[in-house]
Image 1 (cartoon, one colour):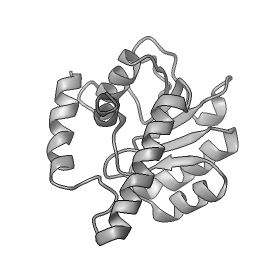
Image 2 (tube, rainbow, N blue to C red; image 1 turned 60 degrees about the vertical axis):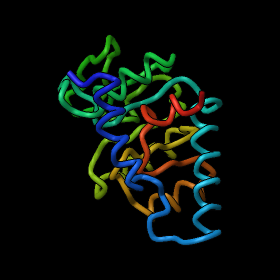
Image 3 (tube, helix red, strand yellow; image 1 turned 30 degrees about the vertical axis):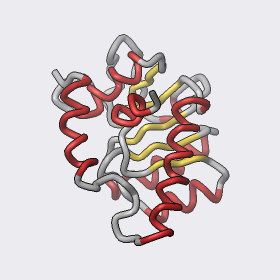
Length: 169
């Protein structure tokens, strides 16, 4: 089973090496500006974005990152909602096949799917009225990011809330 320590350890090395910073191909003042903006969005989503997080790709598979990250979110007071084709109950929460099937408002959509599928999830998140979309580490779709931001929805890409929450202090 992936624990908070496992999730943090496995992803901290990537973060320390610069992966997931969102500024890999940007230099100087522009990189600092991008990082500040992203850090502000991360803080906003984690502290004021709401407490209901749909976790797309979450299943009962304990070896998947989504399983451990969802447990961390719960530990920090977030309600998680599993979204997966199997619609399994995970961490005591009923699962749903799609975001559209969830019968209550969702604040944040946390995306654990391959990048080529993530754009459609972001579009669905906007369609259901989510306040924010969070693409996990290595989930990158610049066009989806632009569409989501243009729709007025906060978005973070290529970062992990299980790493970011403890940094808030």
